[in-house]
Length: 267
Length: 347
Image (cartoon, rainbow over all chains, first blue to last red; front, side, top):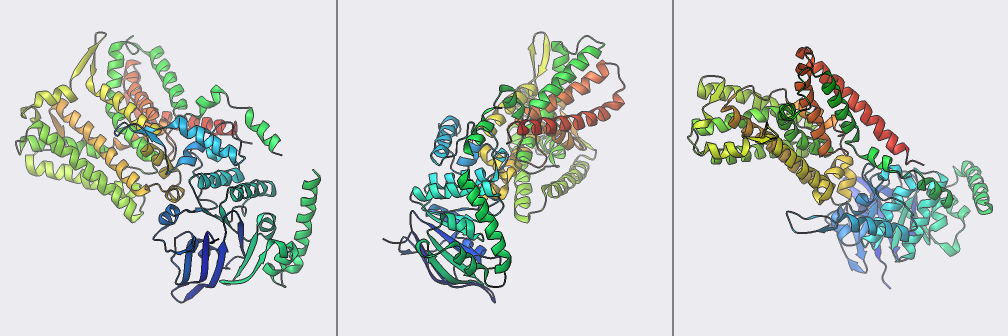
């Protein structure tokens, strides 16, 4: 089976600055592919290349086995690649259902009397969110009243509903607390269960390890390593990502996380 | 964990909370309070009667017609300071097309409306293309038009006034549509009032029930997120500028038909009245939230103050001070009510 999306030896340069070199990755439907990298590793450039903002300088971009290039993010969206940006996903003062259908509004009637089918949009939004496991009593509330995790979840549900084959998540958990991150990770898994190829970009190996099927490590614009879920442990992933120098400090942090995870399981 | 979250969500979905969430709710309460205030201090016994209502709605209507579209523009995240002067420009231009070029009234009206749409387009295009704040761009338009109004009028007529509009061919037809009076319950209501009510309803429908309305909220709420969702933000904003400018021209046309002439300085300074009406009506200065009905309520409050103060035999010199106090109070109440309605729903 062809990968939903595949990069082959992709490079990206901005003038004399080399942002990505020889990056190859495969993303399969119904899996979560994690791209891990520290700040400055080239994650942002990779996201922008995947979502159609930048065209690669070299290498091949394959969509379901076919060589493809995008003119714009809209173009990528039309071909089934949806990107959920951390802060730019929803409009806080607008209601949940308006956010859900923004840019894809359902209308009825003929111009100039063509109007929004509010009832239908509310029903569909509620249904779709419910299917993703987001239970809102009232889709009329401003989305800003939801927590950060729930907002990300609505954005994910929206992308899935509008037929995303590949869902790119840009650091969806980086600004969230442990509990909120948990909410988002749950929806990442439900998107995966619905057959979406999820690309989860993060600098947090703990979050990646909880949901990922495959892990790519990005450093200084290069893929330095990749693992399958079956042959990697969290310690190994973290060590590979952090490098030797920062390991001491991280060991402490990991132990804390493990403790709290243990508590969660008990509770 | 999720059970707890659900319980927290269930509690506060009351009717009151839904009302509080409406942006014009505070303005409605304020308008009722001000109506009660002026009715009780009224020395003529006329303020709440048909005659009095016809008086203050006549003041409110031209403010309201523009304020409704200014509100839409502000919800879309932009400002227009050239609205007031556009009223003057439209009136003067109508007068000159009729008196200098001898055009009939309908051609003149169509030309003036098209001209105003072009001005609106230029405002919007400059804002979208340059990325400069609309406050600055439209301030420039304001000064350009203000100067042109005076200079062109003086150059052509030799005075600071255009008069003689009533000599235009078909003037009576246009007057019947834009500048006549309608008798209801023994009082004469200006037809502008009905234009105002109709435009308020149309704008409300557009804002809350159409795709374009959805895009207005999105463009003002977060332009980047809107773009990511596929909303044509630039086009939405340009259309909003055109609508605002067009509404100002409509008021200018109504005024020149009614007065049968116009002063070169007409409308200057009025731009703030429209913005105040919109803000009193619950429109957020930073965009993304507001209502057309609210802006009309804001305009009604101004009309009441204009008529209510002399009816109460208070010193009319304090009118602006009064309006300033109302503005501040309204914004304070709106911000409090808005926060309270959000607080009720927050976890």
